Length: 121
Length: 108
Image (cartoon, rainbow over all chains, first blue to last red):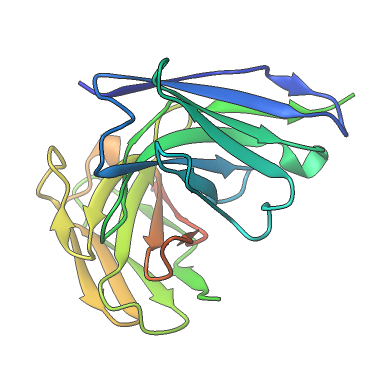
């Protein structure tokens, strides 16, 4: 059974770096059929796609976050990571990692539980 | 950019009611449309993919339809566990994706 376990700090200071990790169990992130995505939900708002990464390191980013976001994978640990810098209060959100089917219709079928990250001094 | 809208933004319904949510795209997206259920403190759940295909394990009271610019998510008989917020997601512009603003379903 596929599980995505997220980890990372709950509070990040303004202008610093938000770092999150997602550890996948029950399947290999090197599966050729899937990408791995990051999505966030600010308090009281809707879902926003941040970006997606393939195990080879190929990345796609939301244009609105491209200049500040960075994703990576560690195939030896079956992990993916997200960095966002510099952060502001508007980056306060629940952050999710998810598995993305790599071909049409590109759905996100398994999700992590989410990390609430608050940007505050 | 393709803009996604949903209506209504919220609705109140009773257990057993039939509920329908509309998602509209600003341009033709064929059937590149997926639906999710989000509850506070829980992982989001894929309900429908490719506009009308039911994800494995999702109850058959959920159904999706539409193509082009107009799509619908229906719940035939609302159950207590269905009170949540529902989002559509377009994948026409893959590898870039956008979600709709969400529809909150509350207990009347």
